[in-house]
Image (cartoon, rainbow over all chains, first blue to last red; front, top):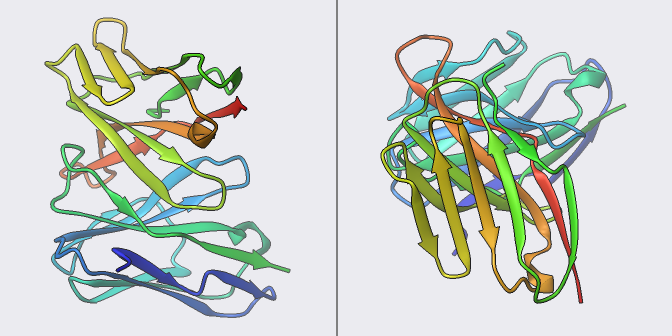
Length: 114
Length: 115
């Protein structure tokens, strides 16, 4: 069974479109994250939710809106996509927030904006 | 910036050799983690070392932490072709809200183990 799953795996879309990426974890974790990995492999946190509450929002444009309907799901909606949004987006989860907890990563969603 | 910096950026070795990767960071930490990322996959946690620990082992992995030098190293002994991956260190820092900790990742070391 996949611990952290994301859909879709690949997303190709045009500038200006709106798209969503879904994430689910079946580990019973309380905390979930969205990360963005650019073409140089630099991985940067975007958001973190703890028990459906937003706890970290790292200067991400307002076009990005996370939603956590329950603690097992964290979705990412992106409005008005731009070329610079092209990247691999990773969802992750952990038992708690803070670096004492290991994070479990999903397989990633490769977003290409043309 | 607060991120860790791995060194070297790329490392190519032969199977059976040891691989050492280094990570330096700028501000005091509570914990440091190492992750592996195979090409096209998500990151996998390898080991966590706390700021009051100096060394930890897990199988063929050995991690050291020198808080006075703000640096850590990851040693993989007797490397295998399957160890080919990118390796990242991650340190904890307060998020922009000031009350919750986040993991800040370095840019990684790409390790290639040749059979």
